[in-house]
Image (cartoon, rainbow, N blue to C red; front, side):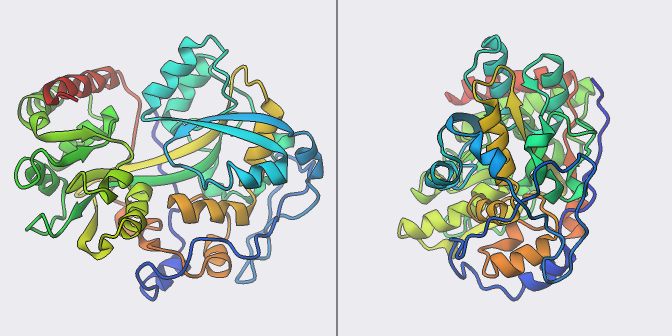
Length: 410
């Protein structure tokens, strides 16, 4: 497989960034009123595209998509990241709109996903899976995902071209963008006396004031990445001296301070289980709401985008090889690519979904979006983000994570 890295080209609409500063903290609700179904006409060719609309939202594809819905009845099994879809979209709305009953299971890392599919021999029972982009070539090579029937996903035309044709699947034969996001950390300012701004601050705090009360993402590249970024090293390094130094520090000096390896810390944060936790931006955003619901004060908590560098990832919808209900999988993906459905999902999980005319959609569909600055990032922030490249060093990073868990007792 190729290790070529391709940077996403447009990550935050300028028009929306201008509005962010005028949005109040935790203002408005998360439900979509007047939930509209706007979709692409069935039978659109792969090369069709909608023109970019202006402030009216013009240019979003519309048409009859009943053929896709009518073929989607049944049960649908999704294997995905934790808390990654609006519960209504995988529950009542999927049942009432697509006539499907969904079963959703969760994994903590791409490695867990690949292991599960590889050991099943094509009989995992899952229909939809959601891998991160750089892992897709090896999944294709191993026969873990199948080619998409694009005639059943006409709403792919609603995805901004900037989020299509990535290096891992240049023709989108196997995947389509679900979300993209980044990594940082979340901390309780009433328990941490210093203002934190960098990955080194995170490390120092976990070894100091928050020792025994900190959490890290349970994924090898992220866990090691924090140390690489703090030390000015690209997290895709393959240099033996970098890997040796990383292992020595994380296993021998850092691991003993970790309370939990937790890829989805928002619930535990609301329960007061951690005073600081590494987190993907959407999960950290959800923590604000959960802290408030638990009776805490969200304003005591601060989100930090990792610095001087951090991650840029894109997750993608794929259909698993041997999917028992492949047509239903295509229908659900197609439905989730309706702009209004996509924005409903975004309001819940807090990640950019890559729709065309995002500034217009946010303004018209979700004008009071909660904590939008944790979803849409400025050009200066995006410039600090690094996409992952799958290299032979990944096995070493997984070994470092496992050794750290053993040292921490995790």
